Structure formats: structure tokens, C-alpha cells
Amino acid sequence: MNQETLVASLRNIRNLASDCLKSMGKDSAIRSETRKDLVATKRTAGSALPDRILELRDRNFFKEPRTAREVHEKLRATYPCELNRVAMALLRLKAKKKLRKASKLVDGKRQIAYVW
Image (cartoon, rainbow, N blue to C red; front, side, top):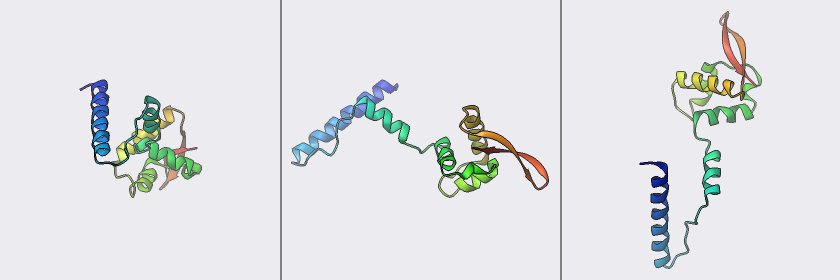
């Protein structure tokens, strides 16, 4: 099923639900959404791992260099995932220039860390 078919099906479902609500005498709780609304919703969803990491950046978590393990520990309470996923997300954010790469001494060994 391609995206256009899926969107058309969802619109059809929305229209059916709206008609049912109208027939019950209630105001339509489902408003018609334009493509602009759908795009805005996608951008502000914020549920993906990179979005969560960027939220940490915006709250000054990366003021000091942080390793992937530290970021994983911080995210674990609200977003359960594997350490290697966090490390890869940090690398990709660095490539997109949303974070900077640094180094940090941990137990006498130099490790890759990320900072903003």
C-alpha cells in the first residue's frame, strides 16, 4: 500500500466518522485537515529518537561533553532503546551538524563524546 492510497483511505474513514457524529446530533469532533496541517503534525511529533536527543540538547544537556552511554542513561526512563541505537543517532546528528564531536576521559580512557 503506497502513501497516497493510505492517505485516501484515512480521509475516507474520517469522513465516515464525521457523518456518524453528525447523524447522532453531535458536532463534528473531526475537522478536515489540509496537507499543510499534516506536514506540521509530522514535524512536531517529536517521538523519534533523534527528536528526543535534540530535546535534551535544547535543555542544555550537551553543555558538557556527553558519551553515548550517558545519553542512553538519560533517555532510558522516557524512551527505552538499545545503546547502539543511541550511538548511531548521535553520529547521524553530528553528520547533520546538530551536535559536535568532542572527547572525554572516562576511567583514564579517551572516549568519543558529543557537545553543543
